[in-house]
View (cartoon, rainbow, N blue to C red):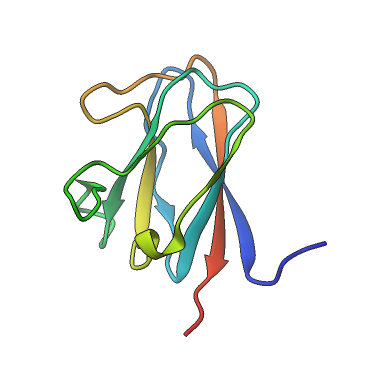
Length: 117
């Protein structure tokens, strides 16, 4: 069974690196993240861009980095309202201060939903 408006976006973090390429969300809102069965232990944090050129750390309204404690083979539920208006993101293994290189190629799957206007 497929849910209308739900899409999955595979995001690669290459072996020996901690940051994915840019992922366009556009009019979609992030609602979940599916972690691969193998994951070098690290939190997930994000960089965001409104134009694809200027990248900034994604923080919440208190100024704290948007971060998720994750484990292999888990599904993280995301509060969609916190992601509205986020155009482009990069997914990071670890934090800005302490990035964690993955020991092999990893695919993190973003789950997005169409915005209702």
